[in-house]
Image (cartoon, rainbow, N blue to C red; front, side):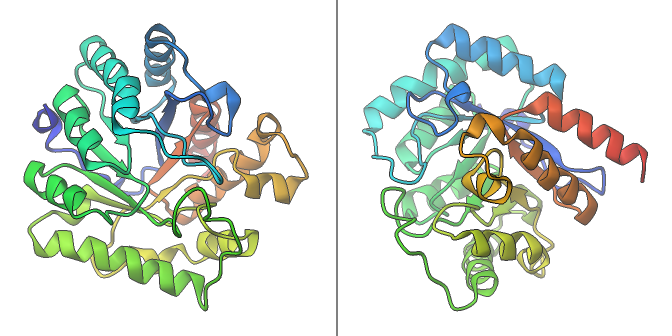
Length: 278
């Protein structure tokens, strides 16, 4: 099934950031309104993102917010597979990404109709690396320090931009050396995944280092996260949209390829206006 959208490329050719819409099939994701509780709800909200401007719908069945507990493979599969199948049947051409750390989940998600792997653990698993190469599937590689349960316990780096870029670029190079096209690899610095506010700001400002010699596409996932709350003083994720849009405008200006967002319509409107004023 993943081969159905084989020509997919993460590169945007200066057309502004593409939007990856978040669809959480979880009871505990940090932004409560993003939680989908039934197949019908997930299908309705997932389909609604497409006319709003989503270029990818990202489906996840395990919360990886700071302090979260892992779920079993069986539970994760039971959450994501029905939604993937329903969305694929309803819309045969929309790229669907599976947001997972587990290669067993990713494999079955691809069989069900997903076409992209979004691995928040950065392809640490050899099984996930092998799956990406075996299926020749587009992949987002994100940096995470340790595990979700403990990643925010005093994160420390000597040079956060250099260290994270080096780790992600090394992993991406392994794929390229094995024949994977750089345009089918997207790198995500993992904002909020084992980073302080200062680390997050440095990573957003130091985005160019992540391009590497292959000019890899870059994904930012900053939507409604705690760094927005720290910068704006809003403790509730429901109050962080305007701050999030500030990051989106900056992403447009510097040339980031993709934004992973909760609010597709708001981001699409902002980017349309910003592009018109270039």
